[in-house]
Image (cartoon, rainbow, N blue to C red; front, side, top):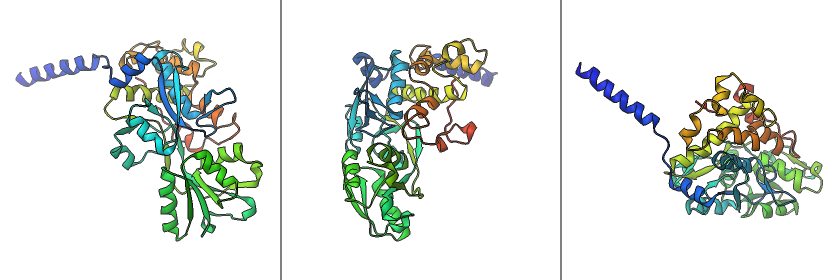
Length: 341
């Protein structure tokens, strides 16, 4: 009897805790008071984060912040973008200059444990490669012994290049530059034999910065794993949850076939999962401390993950990247939205 009574008391206590709404954290309070999210992005990588001809920021990383703004404010435009170099990005987040870093940043053990920052989840799976001029006649990265290689300062790319050289007994001559624009310009000026970065960035560079894209080739080797994703500060769990589940909502929406075009019709769906995602069945918004229409607003204003991918880096973009690892898990990729329930 005594143990049954204790179990009943503990069960009641757990039920009470589960019903409590999320408590506001310092970042969420500050963002609400300010009326906009301050989002740290790249200074300019096509498809990921770059201002268009009208000065509006576009890209798959930009959409992460737009989704969080749609979830919190019901308005994806309530974001201020701060362009950051690789060397600046972590300090900007640590100091509170920005609320979230969404800047094609690789998750690693050392970064996750030493910076006082948390990775949310990958929004793009990538790997490091090399681009060279076709006239160089190089067919493989293993033919680059003695080559000068342009590489951006403050990135995992520097370490990966050194590791690859040591592992394969190749001697590279790195030309290390802080800003990505200067790194690209230096490569295309002919100062470097090769440029190494994430393969997606190499594709963007070739498509947008080369005088003639056909004069350059991306070599076949992929020498690293680069799970790229947004980051927030340690110890601010509700803000972490909001950014994380904004990304998950985009993935879940794609899996369940919810798009910008049909989201209003999907409000009538009988699928319990769709009803929870779109707030027809209430509770998910309360758990995050936002409107029950939080995910509806994301899909309506930003789109699902597939729409964001295609628009920024995929079939409907100049980059024309294949989904590859960034396909949904149901289609052979690694993208896997956590259940909204």
